[in-house]
Image (cartoon, rainbow, N blue to C red; front, side, top):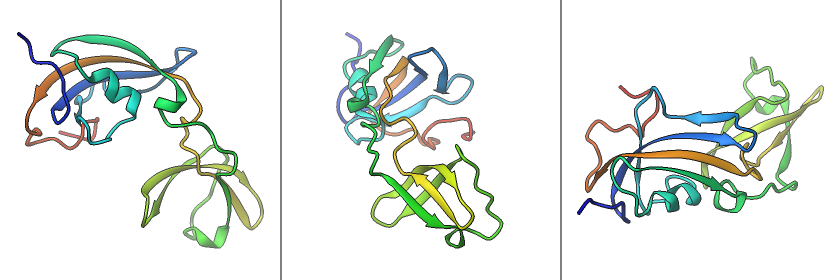
Length: 158
């Protein structure tokens, strides 16, 4: 009987994430598979829930609603910052995604919504908040321990 993905397992998965119009927003194809520790909240809940019970080499297509993805948009999550708060050589552009650091939340993305003479308006919602997403998943490996060379997956890994 083949092993099935369960809580505590380390799962290597290839994935392609798409918007409802079919546009790809992220993919591991051509890169190392993403390694996820099941139950550790390392990925959105809809992605992790879909992996649960899958077998090695199994493929699955799923749809993830916003509540199981990056949450609903919150229009109150917009903040205006003084340009002086940013590095001197920073040239913000509308639509640019920044990675902010907060001692209590760690790193999180913010999108430049407006640039004024002395201020920058940032949208602190995740860029994928409020979106229905679809994923093509393929379980590559199921392990009890993390891979020794694992850096979380992606193209930056060697």
